[in-house]
Image (cartoon, rainbow, N blue to C red; front, side, top):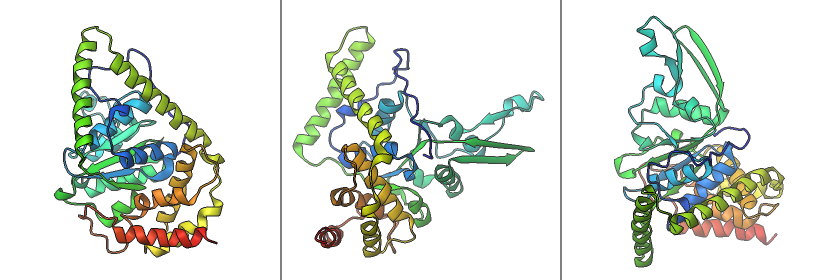
Length: 331
């Protein structure tokens, strides 16, 4: 999150490939999940992505595959039992015991120009979540402790996952996430079969490659990942060339129609719609951009939202969205 130039991508052949991560291009379905991750990369100031869904829906797999594709490495992962020292930094305890007071950076600095992944973020202490979200919104990390003052410019993409059956986030924290996606299990026979085929074929081909054998299957997947990464990089460069001002009144009208609390919702909607247009190689935000992004930007920001509710965007919401956008497009 935060601002900054495009992060460096490590595509060197010596990067650690010892962990089998399904290539991003082999992930079947979950188009909304993937879109949210891509938009957060194109527009780093969006505020992060929250993925809510039951176990086994591929949330962690998608996040790790995305990080491997765009950053060349796995995401920096923050455990739910992480202490404040581990998150923001502090004196190195091992060095301190040797009478050598040295500062040790925390996970937020380690994640600079990368992806910070928090699994089961709803189980993380609210104080720690607040710290992370503050840094994502400001791009600054200031730590004053142990007689030292440390300040860092920190820019990373924040992604949190949660299972709503295990509890939710407080509405104040929900609002701080730019986009939210409800991740559902693949239901069609065709999708489930394709998922199974891709996973099993990947495992077989990865094992062969580890033994020194070539794999056309993995080479093709890597090429597809490279093409997608290049498209995202170009969209990121194109972002500020996209005209968004003509769509701002509609963003506000949508926020009012859905009773969105605060003003962050329309800002996120405008920014994400701009990123969506950039990804589509267009230079002006359209009604279609707003229609696609509105559920991701609004569903967790409305008055009276139940923080444990899994499916927040209903058919009634979709009809209201069409009503507002339809009346606007007829003007």
